[in-house]
Image 1 (tube, protein in one colour):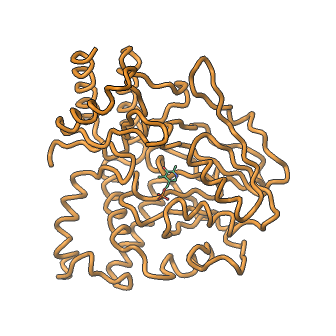
Image 2 (tube, rainbow, N blue to C red):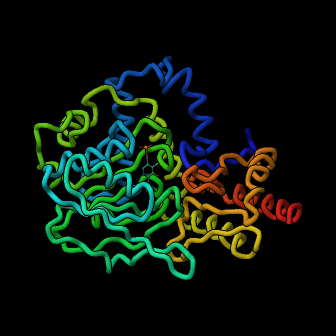
Image 3 (cartoon, rainbow, N blue to C red):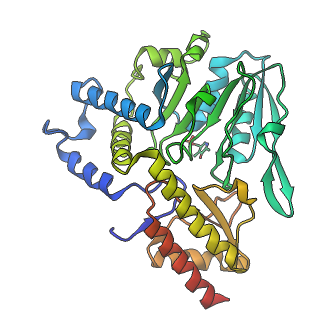
Length: 362
Ligand SMILES: *Cc1c(COP(=O)(O)O)cnc(C)c1O
């Protein structure tokens, strides 16, 4: 297990230290004599662990006091429904700025509950995939909120700018594949959400960080399990939470704090991504066609120009303990996801392998 590197887009690699701790707690959590799997969410130790987890998240992301952290079920896709259900009425408009598959999926789902303006912000410049800069996004004055995705996990296209629109516009971001990887200013958003299986831990938990103002929106038809107000009032324990996923998230946040916090991990993440992009740009054998200023630090799709070599690449990579490099089915090719848990050493090993593969198959 020591030298396997998992580049999967999610569920994704966990730090070794976290996995060793899970193994330990599996039989006896916190010296209570029972497994963490058997633990009730009403257990006082579990509850204080949960409070600590929320506090750690607050510290790491500098979440101001006028925001609440809610732990939800249903993944990021659950939020695609929860957001319009909680915030708008059927005939209301909302702006969905789309830079890739996930932001489109969010907009498609919203059609069931409101009337979204679906705005394509992609553009092609010199055969590269690029985006329209945020200051040129056409915002509709009558839309109730703006939704976008700062890191498109499938295409590897990222928006690093933060929104600075009119103060009264509600701004919502799908941070599933970028939360905790870089510093962000929470106050530029009214709601951000992320499913856990990328940078927070394992599937089963979705984190919502919401400005308290939005908790005042109350609609009777929202299923209680998706209702922000209900979840807030019940401290995210309206029904039985995914206790194990919450626990893993707690360990991940402790690990991140020990690793120096977001500022430190952001530097490491940039270095990792640059190392791989630099190599890809130097060869004619591989390529990545995203405009440099929008390249994701988390998900790096790339292609072998001789496409018939892709399957052989994947097979050889696995023989070299490099896992999860297959590109998403929707775009094919290859993809390396470099979430927080991936060390620079893993990226170097990948690049060494890519270099050798190129020599062997040029
Ligand atoms: C993974 C991902 C999703 C989907 O998450 P689920 O938990 O499977 O619903 C949505 N948006 C983005 C940006 C993602 O990376």
